[in-house]
Image 1 (cartoon, rainbow, N blue to C red):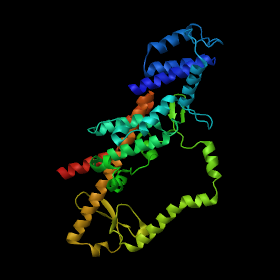
Image 2 (cartoon, rainbow, N blue to C red):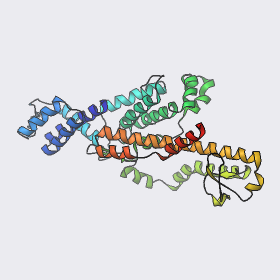
Image 3 (spheres, helix red, strand yellow):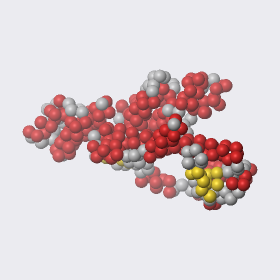
Image 4 (cartoon, one colour):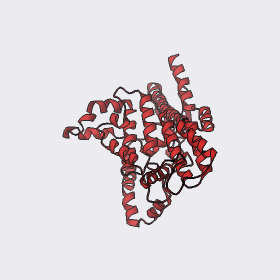
Amino acid sequence: MDSNKDEAERCIKIALNAVSNNQPDRAKKFLEKAQRLFPTDKAQSLLDTLAQNGKPPDQNGRTVHGERTSPRQRHHREDAETSAQGPADSTKPYTAEQMEAVRKIKGCKDYYQILGVEKTASEEDLKKAYRKLALKFHPDKNHAPGATDAFKAIGNAYAVLSNTEKRRQYDQYGEERSHPSRQRQHRDFEADISPEDLFNMFFGNVHVYRNGRMHFAHHNRQERREQQRDGGLALFVQLMPILILILVSALSQLMITHPPYSLSYHPSAGYVHKRHTSHLKVPFYVGERFSHEFTGANLKNVERTVEEDYISNLRNKCWKEKQHKEGLMYRARYFGDSELYKSAERMGTPSCNRLSEIHLILDG
C-alpha cells in the first residue's frame, strides 16, 4: 500500500539520522520496521552495511554508502525525523512536502477535489480517501501553516459527501456557492460533526506520534498554560454563546408540549412507567396519565413513532460502531500492529445486530 511505502520511507530517514548520531541500535530498529512495512533494496542495503561495521558517518558528512551529504541535506533529514516523531517544543517544524500538501488542499474548489475522488465515488471510496488524508493532515502530526484549516476542510468534505441527502444538495448547489443567491444554501453543506469527533470515530482516541506509533495529543503543555492565563473576561466571552443557548432552550421548553414518551427512563420529566410496542416490542417510558390519554388509534400512532425513533437511533449507533471498528482495523494495518488488528476484528456491533433482527421481523 502507498501508506506503508510512505511510512517505510519515513523510517529509513529516521534510521539514517540515528546512524549519523552514532545510534546503530536505533537505526537497526527503524530499518527493520521499514522492511516489515514495505521491503526495499535500499533498506536492506543499509541493514547489511550496518551489520558489517555499525559505524556512523565520518565528520566529513559521509553516509553509510560513502556518499557525501551537504549540510542542507542533513538539515532536511533531521527535519523529516522531527516531523515524524512530533516536536518536543513549541517551534513545531514542518517539511516542504507538508507545506505543499496544505497549499493543494487550500486550492481545491469543491469537496470532491479536497478528498481526491470523482463525483461518482462510492461510500467506500470516500472512507478510504478520508482515512488517508486525516492521518496526513491531523494538526498534531502536520505542523505546516494552515494544516488545521486543511484538516477541518477534509473532515467537512467527508461529513457532507457521506450524508446522502447533503451530498444530493451539494451536487445540486455546491458549485454555485459564489453566486449571491446561493450563499445561504451553501451553509447547509457544513458538517454536523466536528473534525476531531469524526477523526476519533474512525481511529479511536489514541494520541502524539512516537516510536513509530500514533498517539495523537490534543493539547500540549504550553497550550494548557496559555489557556490557564486567559482572563475572566475572555472566559465569559467564550461562554456567552453557551449561556444564550441554555437560556433559549429553557424558554423553548416552557413554550412547547413534552412528547408523550421517552426511549429512556427519565424520572425528572415524569417518564417512569415502562411499556413495549405491540409490534416490535420496543421498550419505552411514559407518564402517569398516558394510558388515559392514548387509546385505540392514538396509541397505535404513538407506538409507530416510538419504533421509528428507535430504528433511527439504532442506525446511527450502527454506523458509529462500524466506523470505529473499520478505523481501528485500518490503523492496525497502517502500522503493522497485529494485536490491535485482532482486537478490532473481535469487536462487536450490537446495534447493527439488533437492527438486522428488526429488519427480519419487518420483512417477515
